[in-house]
Image (cartoon, rainbow, N blue to C red; front, side, top):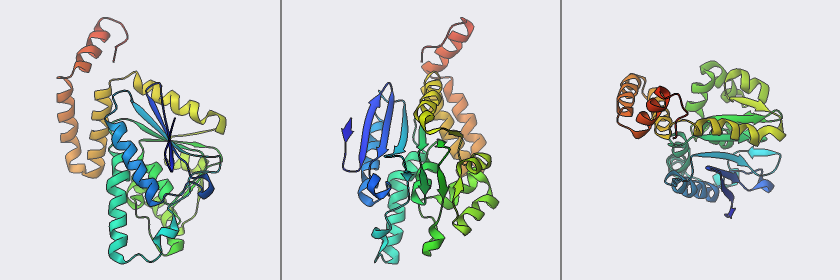
Length: 258
């Protein structure tokens, strides 16, 4: 277990368990926490012993209950722009384009920047008691870490605008129905469910997983480029050792050794 100022990191059985550790602040994202997240993600990206990440919050009350609003006080327009750009570049976009699967284990409140953090992950699993929302309009703001873009991609324009313009929270059942989360489980089963999903992914080709992430993201970012990206990734797969192992295993009626 590595103990950072605002994070905990444990690597076990190919999985990095990354925990935002500010329970007294409901794990709110201050600048120091975002900096640490960026540093850890860069390291895990090149760690060949890590195939996936579970991202969660410390304690039982919150995943991440938003940004640290105290840090917003006194910011100029240009400073606010720089803060949003920095958060996108250093953390949110890194998560979204990460070449290994990342699961957000939503163990409580995921609000504002916390929900944006979860939406940047590839898969979301929530406890039944979780509450999610983008309450920025109640502060005279809008989401600044990708919420206005990633929420519509998950739930559609109408639901996204309802959440963003009311600032209201939704419960886990509604989040599941809308497609905001992939699974809802009891709190005792949260880690088990995340590990179950990752275990299945680990039995597949790592190079294919990365290619799949990239192709999906390309199509969402630039729909006119999506099909071409898929075709190119499909063709490139034929050059990889994983393709030869996977096809060989299929023909030999055995499990592939990825």
